Length: 43
Image (cartoon, rainbow, N blue to C red; front, side):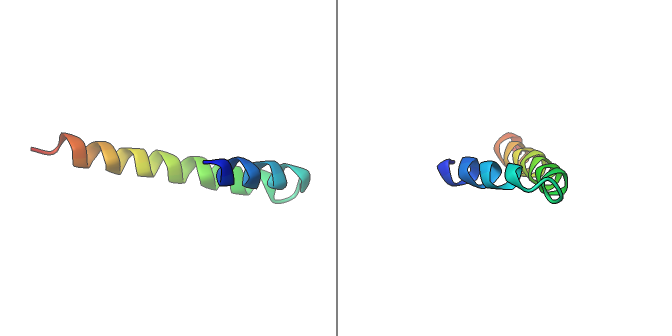
């Protein structure tokens, strides 16, 4: 978690890659949470 915060802070300094990487991280987190919930709620 701390690594992710440091990574986001280091990405914010470069304005060119920041939007793409932040969108990729958000999509990856949504995908991970969806799979995690699917595993939990599967009978």
